[in-house]
Amino acid sequence: MSETTAPAKREMQDFERVLTSSSSELARFDEPRRSPLQHIQHFLHSNPTVVPVLVLVVSTLIFGAIANNFFTAFNLTLIIQQVTIIGILGIAQTLVILTAGIDLSVAAIMVLSTVVMGGLSVNMGLPSILAVPIGLACGILCGAVNGGLVTLFRLPPFIVTLGTWKIFFALVLWLSAGQSIRSQDIDASAPLLKLFGGTFSLMGAQFTTGSVVMLLLFVLFFYVLNSTAWGRHVYAVGDDRDAARLSGIDTDRVLLSVYAVAGGLCAFAGWVSIGRVGSVSPQSFFEGNLDAITAVVIGGTSLFGGRGSIVGTLVGALIVGVFRSGLNLSGVDVLWQQFAVGALIILAVAIDQWLRKVSA
Image (cartoon, rainbow, N blue to C red; front, side, top):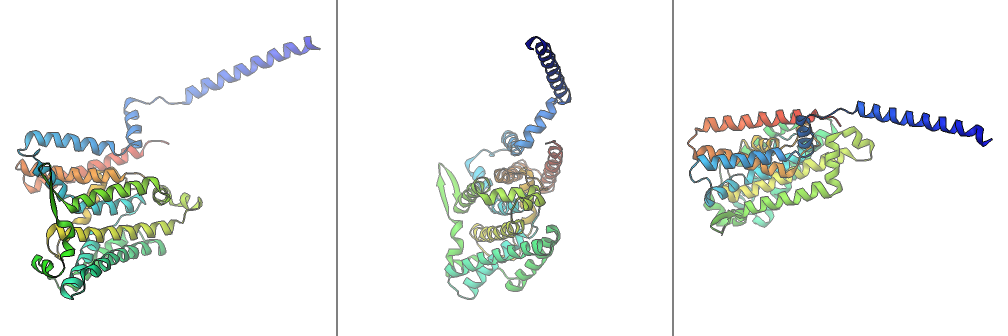
């Protein structure tokens, strides 16, 4: 019996070896080899912040070599001060864009909140300790309106925020009557509004309290997006909203909370801007929404949602600041400064489209 079954076992083992070798060869045949360019593409797809960091380092070195006084402590800290407001607005915009949306009203919400704070505290005599929270609540409410229109009525975020941008700025002009609140009036009746305008020296460099708060906000939201369930839900909704809903995530609640948080951040940016500018002007930061989108896009966050980093937004804001400072110190006309920033935006979007072609 054993003599009969031994050859059959050997034949079966040989047959299995043939199948195993054939399948392994087939697997090796089906697996495409990546070119060096494809390896770079996959690496950058997994690490979207690498490109903006390289751009920041290279541009800093170039402008340091060709522009006088670029590497002085005064100029470097001035760059940080100049991107403070745009950086905070960029955090708000990043949250929205990660959900595959966009908010064109961030600057309008910011200015509206400052007008509310200034009008209540300076013009109406309300204690600033109450006026400031009301202004922050105004920003949250504006963001919630955006989120409600997007989630409840399934309207496109671009159209919704384009409309509310106009509405909020109309409210700004109505509440302020087109009049600015002067620095002297703020100092006399509501100095709390300038809380983030204070400066201090460190190793010969001049920093503002607002710039430090901006950096702390970036740290906070880096933790929130990477280490909390809410942050993971934000990425999931932006990557595939239907799949996120099927997995048990309340996508409408996530979107509503994102827009509300973004509105609160815009209002906080308005509070910081009063200390930065020293006054409340209904015409200030009119292009803040475009600058915030610029920082987010250059920072590597995908306009299609689900991919990006809050650190990239900080780097993107710094890139814009470095380019404008370097070109200005180099004597380049403002026209060409805008040209350079526009070219950076187009290049960033082109790189994002290229990286999106990476197969899973």
